[in-house]
Every structure is written in C-alpha cells, then in structure tokens.
Image (cartoon, rainbow, N blue to C red):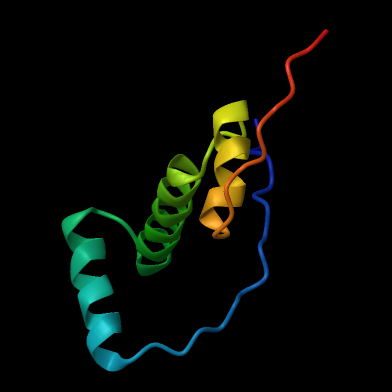
Length: 80
C-alpha cells in the first residue's frame, strides 16, 4: 500500500550567527531532532507561552485596559 505524499513546505532561509546555529545543532542532537525540528519546536513553544500569558478577554481584563493607559475606569451606572 503506497504511503500518502508528505506536505512539502517551501524552505525559509534564515541567517543565524554561527554560535547560535552550533547551540541549536547541539540541542537538536540532545533532543533527537533535526536542526529544522529543533527550530520549529522552539518557535512553537515561544508562541504557546506568549498566548498563555495574554489576558483571556474576560470582563476583568477589559476593565483593566483604562488603568494600563494611565486612566481610571469610569464608574459604571447601576442597571435599572
């Protein structure tokens, strides 16, 4: 049974300082990954961490926006 074709992602050339590339190669070997796999894994984890630190958009977070801009939130009028 033939295997399904793999998705071919076009290469994205990136220039890295030699020291950084060497560090990534060492980490890739230690983690049993290719250099590309190591870079992709590290980038994904960076974005996951960033998303985890972002406010959830709940009412409390929205109320905090004016104070982060240097203003106090306006008092809310009681609903009738």
